[in-house]
Image (cartoon, rainbow, N blue to C red; front, side):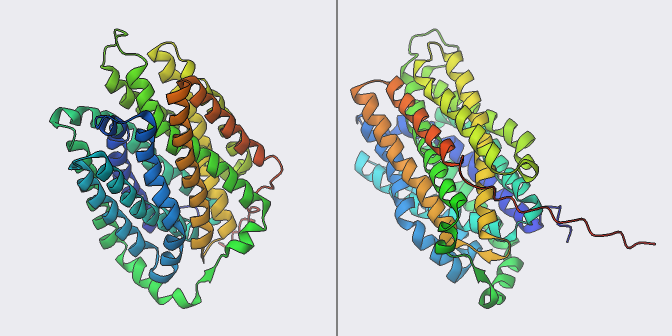
Length: 407
């Protein structure tokens, strides 16, 4: 197999990620407004996002163990089906308490398919193109996240339940895609499970780069997966009411998230694979700094266009972070090794940030202002950048090209 080509089985996972991302992008800007319609505070709305992250956190260790026992792809399919069921249930939630419960249960499935996918990518990615593989996987999510919020806003014309039902169906389609198209890979992995080496958490923890990845993962989870999905839609929908917008202020939430995703896509498509030449540290540090400054200024945006420009810049910064960070974790796991515990612990730190970030930001919004919520988030991201200043590079040394043996 050509080590510079993305293996076909990874392309299947990338295609599945695109389907998942479209669905996630559909519900992300709508969920906070959907929750607020139950007459609860900004803190309670943030709790819906945090409950999802909390159950991801609690079940991350189990997902790491299950990927070793059952294999990555079975756990991936099970996770997708759990989230699909939770989305369909969310569409018919009769009260806030059940909405909170359904979102929390969805977090179990989410951590199953996220950890299993990252473990599969780390084990199957050729070392020379890990940055490229991580970039392609991230691009699939991001392109879906660009289209998703815009599609979600239009689906509101069919009622508030429609976006959640569409996401549920999209997840079932993604599960079927992986189940049928990766059957051969699943059987091969089952036969090789006895000889498969494991990357232990104790081994990874001894490496400063892994500890730096945990820190930056926590801060990125705080900002990107937590605050952005819970507070930005509320800010966009409430701060510019009556401002003479072409679109409704509630639709501005979807446009803001789509703009953030667009910045992500442009950066990932153009620069993500460069971490295979530049190393993992520079993109992570630069990306966190850019995202920190632009996110910290969001709450001071005087006009909708400023909000969108800052969202675009923050998205571009995050586009540098995520692929390089995932490639760094894959470097630490190593090719051909099952790194379930290593990956799940990294995922736990991101989820912990995704839990604490919305809760603190929601508290600051209720008692101070949006400016405080976004400002503190920016400072937290700078801590993640600082953690990598003393961490060594994880990019493996380049292998020499084999000599040309042809006559």
